[in-house]
Image (tube, rainbow, N blue to C red):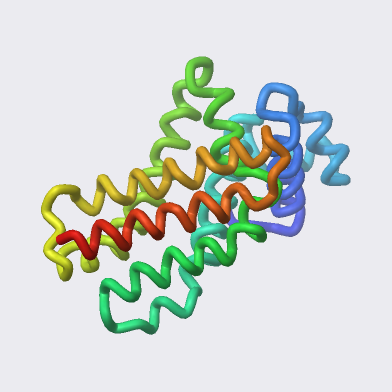
Length: 196
């Protein structure tokens, strides 16, 4: 279904409410109230709350990735330097991207055992993000002749570092936690590339 201003409002409302209070606590009534639309408009745009949640998660992931993908590291020819500048750019954008948490992470933790279809959808979105990381890291690892870890392994570590740091940042009330963890990952990646 094509996006419309009403659909965009509903998605934005769902993202805000689900990120702040979780999937189960976010009702259709609270979404339509927050979005300023009618319940009929909601059901015209989405067949269910789950369908909306899946659209909201996908929208959040795609917009986040496009913000990361627009970085200046894309113009760097050397694959090792490009990968390191990519990590630097993620660190720089972390305040914008994850200052208020991760919608994927928030919903993933809640639905992991209760909503298998949504869990599978979130896993697919995480898989796509990991694929994007692999595309940047793989040439760097190949250029440095790193053989003990695959690009998939390193990409999974980066994703786990970011999502874990987001949770810790929120629980500890430390806005700089994510930046520090990404900087630590960059140090790890630098050592890995040099050790080979």
